[in-house]
Picture 1 (cartoon, rainbow, N blue to C red):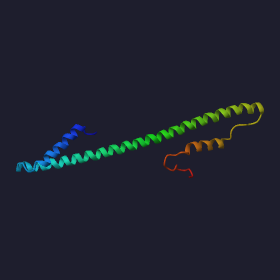
Picture 2: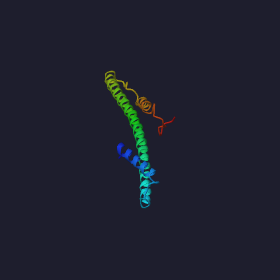
Picture 3: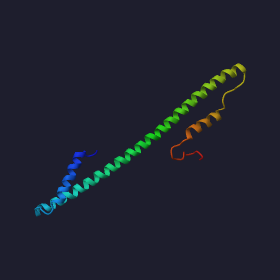
Picture 4: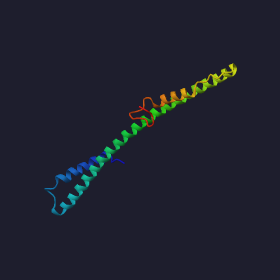
Length: 132
């Protein structure tokens, strides 16, 4: 969870006040001021790191969403190819029964079409098991 912008600004102002007040500080309070300053520096540093991590996670998440969309599009293409092949197969099966000969599209040709659809335009990485 991120710190609100106003809280962060207040912390930075407090840091500036604590850092600049050492010449007028009461000697007994100097150690407390120094400890508070160190803790505040640590918190501000951690907040900056967390914001960097949030940004990195956001970028990674967007990359995963883009990759998912590419694969969903490929799945749609495969489903469409399967429907076309099935329709052609059903149609030629009807013709084959009428003519007494098989005219269906060979299964190997269909699987080659699917491989072409699935492994073309693969995003920035080699697909395991597929020759380059």
